[in-house]
Length: 205
Image 1 (tube, rainbow, N blue to C red):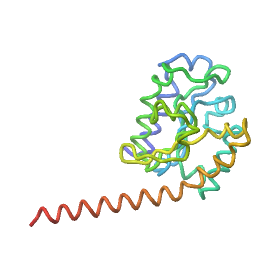
Image 2 (tube, rainbow, N blue to C red):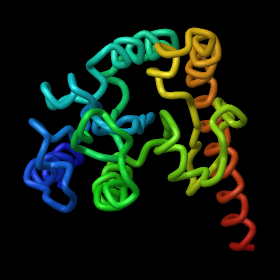
Image 3 (cartoon, rainbow, N blue to C red):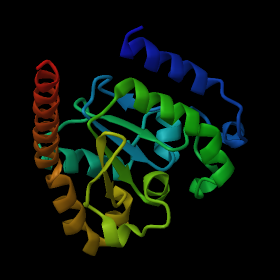
C-alpha cells in the first residue's frame, strides 16, 4: 500500500471516528494534509473554527502565519505534512483534554509511521508534551533532540505570536533553522551509514 493510500485510510477512519466526544460538536474532521513523503511533519494542537469549517489544518490566521514561516525556511505547505494531536475541534476552541488526546493518539502514531519524517516540529504545548513531558516551551524552543532516529524540534505555536507579538522574532528564528536541521540530519545519516559499511567490511576479514 502506498503512503497516499494509507493516509487516505486514516482520513476515512477519522471522518467517522467516535472514540471521544469531540466529534459530536464538530462540523468536519481535520485529519491533516500535505506531502505523503514529507521530510518534515508539523504537529499542532487542535482544529479551530476555520479548520473545522474547511476540514483542513491551519487555515485561519495562525495558518497564514505558518505559511509565512515555512516560506522563510524555503518551504511550502506542499513540502511538509501538517496535522494535530486531535482531529476534531474542541467546543469553543478550548484545550484538548487528556482523554481526547489519548483517543486520537493512534491516528497520529500511524501518520508518523507512514510518512516517516526526518524532522518532527511540535507546535505548542500539547504536541510538546508528547515528546518532552514536563518541559517548558520557553526553555527548549528551537532546540532539536534526536528521538527514535529523527530530529524533534519544539516550537511555539504560530498563534502565540498573534497573541504576543514579542515572540514573533523567536518563532521566525526557530523556523529559519529547518534547512540546516535537514542538512545536519543528512550528514548524521551519512556518517552512520559509513560507519555501518566499515563495520560490515571489517567483519568479513
